[in-house]
Image 1 (cartoon, rainbow, N blue to C red):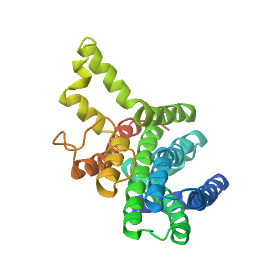
Image 2 (cartoon, rainbow, N blue to C red):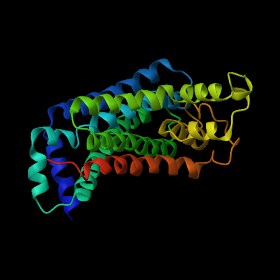
Image 3 (cartoon, rainbow, N blue to C red):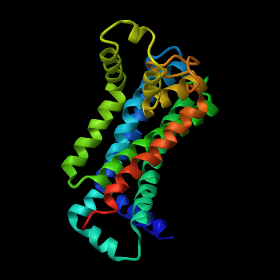
Length: 272
């Protein structure tokens, strides 16, 4: 019950954040306006709009997750309130779980509200609006957002200042979303001594490394389940045993557990 109490307290504090309310209002109104504008200028209908929406959320959802997760613990450490929290009958594991639950609820609610606003406008704008597909897209997007909440929370647990947490969290965003495949390709070229065969017929570990990021797994699920999005960049669908829906879901869930668990290794011995 202690973890739930911490989560409820975190939610109360979050509701009092003016910045969060501004972010929420901007996201909800922004996606409603995007949906309406797309309906005016995109003549191909709902399917093309889903591609547009996917392209936006692929980049925006992780930023929302990072913004909500990075201050989860470090803010209390810097303000000194973590000492008061730890003086109460809570274990450090319960503190981590409670913080994660609270931030997960906020992130899921924010993304859900943005999607509900977009969906309401879509019903009016697109005669071919497909509610089941839209709901599946929303659930996948919430899971994807939560992975970056967990990642940012892991840094918040492990590092000792807001500046370091921000740098690490947004650095991880750039690496995992924008640069990861290029990094893997460079490693392959180095190991194959810059011979083209390294990229034309990459080793199993290279394809596996590309598939293990939240971005690639999310893109794979969107492509195979809904037929939208950029596809699993760098991994050909069906080319390897691991390129499958269960593995992609497991990877996203694994990030939710792995990142905070690694951060906890430092947090459990930290002194406040």
